[in-house]
Image 1: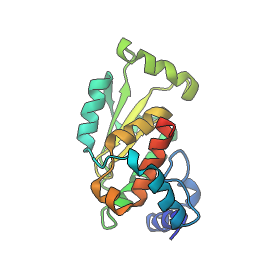
Image 2 (image 1 turned 90 degrees about the vertical axis):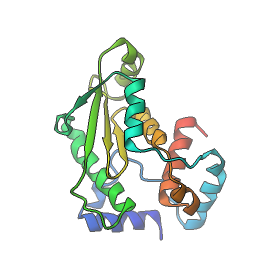
Image 3 (image 1 turned 45 degrees about the vertical axis):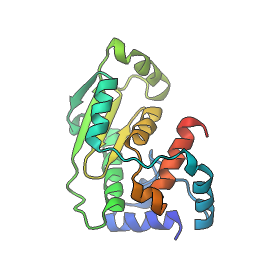
Image 4 (image 1 turned 30 degrees about the horizontal axis):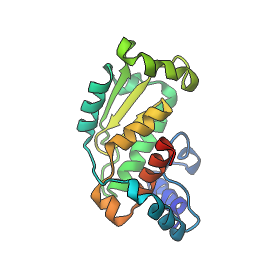
Amino acid sequence: MKKIGRLKNILLRLSIPKENATIGYIIAEHFDNDKKEAEFIDKYIEYVVPEKKSINEVIIYFNELFDLEKIAFDDIPKKYYNLMLLNAKLKLTVKNNNSDKTDLDFVVFKLKDTKKNKSLLDTRKTDIKNEDVILVFENQSDYVYSNLNWLNVYMYLCLGISEHDYYNRTVNLSEYIYNLKEFYGL
């Protein structure tokens, strides 16, 4: 089945319009058929180490890397709110078809305006202007997000890929490789 077909079926189960699913988040590289996806994976699989970290491990890492201030999920900019709910629900459905999609557990931070964060905050001018840089972690679905594009990809890569996804060559592996390719310019 094509990736678009899988995505459409998941969205129908969630009652989410297809046009809302593609805004701001890359699910995976889209392939015309499974053979092209397999070739894509074979080409880049040597760059992947199957090691999945928990959301808590990733939060600890980013708390050590940056000066973060915890904020409520309701305090994020409204333009990201529905996008994050949609994507976390989508990832939760992919992860576990029988899960309760209303049981999302978001942990949200924003970068403090400190010397430690200065170089990262300076990069936002080209990406998000003067908005706060936010880092979002959702515990149930393993969804991560930042409104700073390269940080978003880095957070996702820090989370890693499971052995199950690696050895079974799931859509999560395609997505992970796509993001590795984008981040490192492979």
